[in-house]
Amino acid sequence: MDKFDVIIAGAGTGGSLAARTVAEAGFRVCFLDRKKRADIGKKVCGDAIGRHHFSNLGLKEPTSDEVECFMEGVEIYSPDQKTSYVVKGEELYGFVLNRHRFGQRLITEAEDAGAVLYDQTQVLDPILEAERVCGVKTKNLKTQSEKTLRGSLVIEASGFMAALRKKLPPNLGIDRTVDNQDVEACYREIRSLNRALDDKTLCQIYLNQTTTPGGYYWVFPKKGNRVNVGLGVAMVKGFPRPKDQLYQHVLSQPLFAGSSIIEGGAWYVPTRRPLNSMVGNGVLVVGDAACQVNPIHGGGIGPSMIGGKLAGETAVKALQEGILTREALWEYNTRYISDYGAKQAGLEVFRILLQSVSDEDLNYGMHHRLLTEEDLLKASLGDDIHFSITEKARRVFKGLKNITFLRKLRNTSKLIREVKSWYQNYPSSPAGFEKWKTRTDELFKKTLDQLTK
Ligand SMILES: Cc1cc2nc3c(=O)[nH]c(=O)nc-3n(C[C@H](O)[C@H](O)[C@H](O)COP(=O)(O)OP(=O)(O)OC[C@H]3O[C@@H](n4cnc5c(N)ncnc54)[C@H](O)[C@@H]3O)c2cc1C
Image (spheres, rainbow, N blue to C red):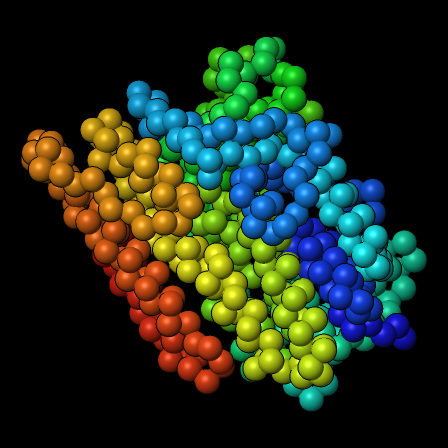
């Protein structure tokens, strides 16, 4: 039986950052992935990441062979495509990554720091003793043999499927399930076009409730004539198959005439606030497994790395102090919530608004600039939004049949501020957690009532 200080399930962006952080502090850490080492980093993704994540995390920026394109901003199209906003700003500078190479770099950096990678190793179950996670049961996918690994701490970083989180006993205090309505089902392809995109510094986003109910479709530039094109739809009852939507409504457009597929794949992304608590006795949860994703655009590479680093640092501190309880690990919750989680919660409110607005209202709102580039920039960054509901806008709205849109916009600004300020009250220890959770659930129920009815 092998024994480690920390065992990490998953060697994606979250798991790799956690592994490196723990290894750099000199602790024995292993990270496990069911993929072959050479395949780690191949992920169904839009591959875009803001540059600010690298400076915030103190991470080396991607090298030229890890970058497909340099991004200066985003171009967002209204459903009728008659209005488009180019949203630029230093905060939106970034990269469209070669995701595979970037993932390979992150595991190499973790290994160089001393972390041990077990590839082709599936994590099956958490091992618990005295109501504390103290290891994992694994299966070697080459030999099919099963083995138990023991660790003082376990970090769950296995992505959306959350192999461990779903099997944790409820009394550990970590939610095991995520509502389907908070998940986007996605399908994306890497395609080669007949010609390169006109502007390869912008990532294009198309809002359209008919093609992508509750989501959007995107066309992101890659090297040469290649693009990353895909879409996501909210997983509410009767949602359409994403691949069918892409073929029927997107790839049928003139831009894709004569294009060819290089690779394609489907996956999921949680688009909600982070889990209410991401720690339990002996365990921390990071990345998609903890719902650490921007709820508006589904960007989770940066947040998963934030989660990985913070979880790693918390694990190190707990190991140094020799206390591995939920209380001792709680600091990871508070640090993540104040770093990115509170923003996510505010953005979930904005997501609920966008999902409840009809194409007609969105066309109208964008055309008359009731939602501006600045609103969308702020929204994507998680800043406060004050929709420009000026007198002029009010007059414009008088001509609009559906006045509820105006009410919704007003309510959204208020609700975002309320939710974000409520997140400032995130409890500093597990003591106040149940009360906080109850109020949080009430706030989001109120949000749904006000914005969707
Ligand atoms: C279609 C799509 C487009 C996206 N576009 C973007 C984008 O443009 N920008 C952005 O920032 N984010 C994007 N995201 C989100 C982003 O990909 C994720 O948020 C991010 O990869 C999460 O990292 P992670 O480390 O938590 O999980 P992952 O990257 O999924 O890593 C989890 C790892 O765990 C391994 N694993 C899973 N189960 C087990 C198991 N039982 N045992 C062992 N190993 C296991 C997997 O093989 C994987 O390597 C997109 C997501 C989708 C689905």
